[in-house]
Image (cartoon, rainbow over all chains, first blue to last red; front, side):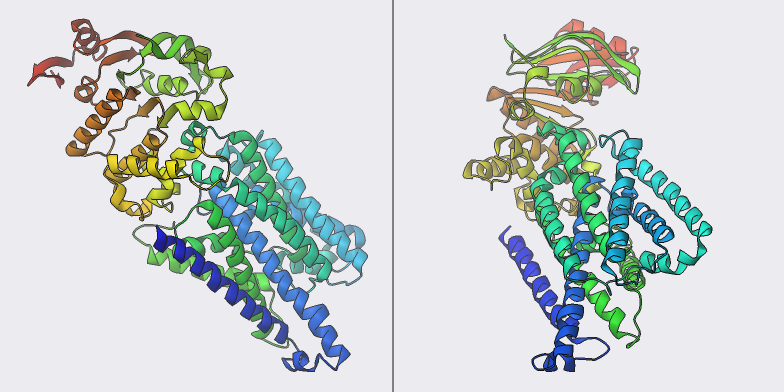
Length: 334
Length: 256
């Protein structure tokens, strides 16, 4: 037991150290290189590059990844399915539809830097994600039956995806801008976005941690969890709210980033076996680390050009899961 | 003898299909009662209703208090549940055996409070009584079906409730551990606890103090395990394809 506790603390410490190292690296990588950091003391432009672009972007990548990692751990615990991901309740397609509608309405590019346009797109993505989850809940008639919830999520995903396609057919000029959102990106994350993600992320993390014993109980099945005297209905609703809020916040700021939410809890579980209270915390840190690393690679691989970070996370996450599947060929993915 | 659990005109349905019909049953406190019957007789449904885990008509009372009015945590402290098929749940594979058994203490703990000394002692007692203490640092996913079942039994024992309800607790257990399970039940009853188990192994069920014989959603008979009327009811619901014998001081049911 003590050995396990030590292992958990060790993993937490290693993850935090890696995060700090990548944060430093993230501040140094960009079109102007590490010299901007060295010149920041006396060069106001270099200072601005570091302080207003690289730092919030790197930190933002960590925060968005942490939100997705946390949401992934909650989704996998709630649905008792290791393949559950944060977008399961239709939030991804809802956010895409929201952004498509906003783009068709504003006629703006998502790379536009005017704060009003950015706020409009971010807001549309958030509202779209949350409305999609509410629609899923309505179709599933609440949160009591996880299978119905899953099915409703799939239906909402398909229907809203089709609606988004209809919008893009109607105004084809938004296609490229929408593609940018759907591939995911951290390039435009500023301090305000960081503040929103940090604030809502802290609330989600605290709530998920407090509700984690329910996920432990649910791991033994619905009946056993109910026999432990847990008010399952209310707690499940609160967990769905955490899932929707964390996913909606991340998607709104960074677009659709694949695999981080799915892979982060798997990575944690492959290193330590523990209760959900630890799993949600460690998955958040792991998710942050994964997205920060992917963001760095996206900036560095074909510098000074950038790859969409969502493409990288999909490739890396997919490869990792494939490796995991082979390694556990006999036991299957856990 | 006072009743630990009492069902009064209880009906229940699964997916709109009536499964239990007007069950009147009083389960004696401090005794081991087994529920038996052919497949589809409603045994597990009855147990779930008694545990307060299934909506039902009529009334279920736990030591003179209606389950309807009993707060969930109070019910959970007084009545422990071991479900069917729990050993097959893969979603618990990443939980350590010790952490899993500690879930049984949840009804006694304040929310998010760390386990107390009493909680740790109860978990150790439970894991030792099912010979699972040595695996306490291992994740459930590394254990065999029978070993998992013993850990899940320890989780149910860790509640230290007055009433234990168990659905197919012998699934995956080899004969020596089935025998251990029986000894554990006897020890619990000797401490004054009430045990209600749904069992397919009729000879194991006949080792209980009392037998509830079910068929087609109705209670056909409730009586002592040595009672010839109980044996007759048992043979009747299994269409006389089993016969109860007395062998080496024990009642056993053999296929005819």
